[in-house]
Image (cartoon, rainbow, N blue to C red; front, top):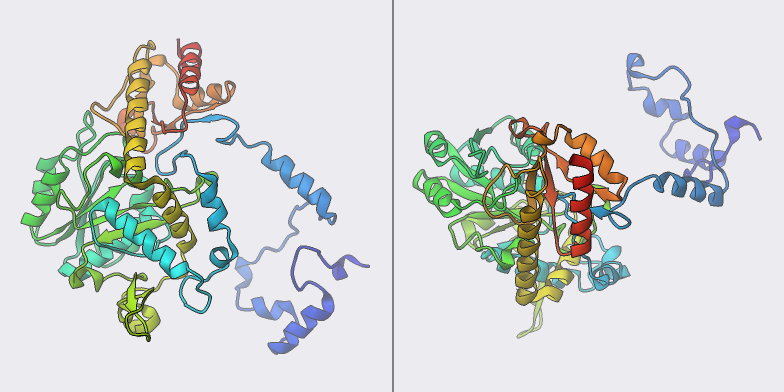
Amino acid sequence: MSRKQFVHPYIPNSEPAVKKQMLEAIGMESVEEIYKGIPEHLRFKGTMELPEPIVSEYRCQRHVEGLLAKNKNAKENICFLGGGTWNHYVPSVVDTIMERDEFLTCYVGEAYTDHGKFQALFESSSMLADLTGFEACNTPTYDWANAIAIACRMAERMTGRKEILVAGNMDPDRLLVVRNYCKPEMTVTKVGYNKETGCMDLEDLRRKLSADTASVYFENPIYVGALEVNAAEICRLAHEAGATAMVGVDPTSLGILEAPAVYGADYAVGDLQPLGLHMSYGAGLGGFICTKDEKEFLGEYPSLLFGVCKTQQDGEYGFGEVYYERTSYASREKGKDFIGTTTALHGIAAAVYMALMGPQGFQELGEGILKRVAYVKEELVKIPGISLPVTGCSYCDFMVDFNKTGKTVKEINRALLEYDIIGGKDMSREFPEYGQSALYSVTEVHTKEDLQALFGALKAICV
């Protein structure tokens, strides 16, 4: 068989007769006709330097596994990476339930494949609302950044204002998504922060609040490794200016930190990842938005909301989509937004995790993390050349200053790999004002032996 007629075993519909039938069905004679709209100057003219195809499925599997084996993963190494995707323990029952066929293969938007999916998403939203102190919560968005951006648009529609003030200490990657999503109608303006405490600069906030401000966004815990002790004051100042207040949260921290609704926030956003989702090379994400159960807020949700509904049988209730007419599914171009399946499956995983944990479990988790972080910070400053650039209490994430060691974070992280340790996130590019500092994360998975291994390795590398 010639190369031209080769049928690749892993590419669907590559068999010549099948390909011919498909082309005839769309009224074309060749694949080239499909791409004829692409200008010539954008087309690649040469031959791609690709290896010969591995036709044997077994050989292909061995090849891919060999490539994956080069990775340093968080299971076979001690991992201190955080900053948005954290290394938490995932109970095995979470995977077991999430992988059930009725959930795994269930499309999110419709009822025709519902086998408990609607109830699972209702329960997930209800527990997230309990954690944040609100009553309403949407089905998951793509991730935390997407949740912020959607909530910003919600605030703009509700207030009629066109500016969002965001804390300058927030995750820069999340900020990029927000800026892109708010273009071109809205302005996103950063508010300064105190380098030593990591907290928002309230004087700068006062100066920048105006009649154009739709919402003030800040994070608690803060991305740079602190707690926002002025959270209630930020919300108060926003409300005095006629704006809303939006807080980004790590949901696992809410077993020990005050719920956002209690200190005055109007929106709580965050990610489902720490609620029973594996790190998965930085994926396993799913954003959430929580608000009050009031029409002015509910009417601006672009995503699906699940609630308890009456059924055709008197006295019986079920779970289903509520306030459906505001979505693009019902109102098409008049809907608030257009979204797809996104990450509803992750919402179900989060429901299993939260139900397993319960209030007491979240409290114990938070207390355990706080104690570990306090212990690590106390021990790290005993190592010559190492200090903590941000003062105060931290949850999970905290920054470590390596400037006085004479080594870069990149050099230190490379050396730590020799000890089977994955170091903290290099912050020198995102926040150059801190110089050679790294964002470390400590969670419930880290044993005392893990932490002692880190101390020993850093002493050997830095001293």
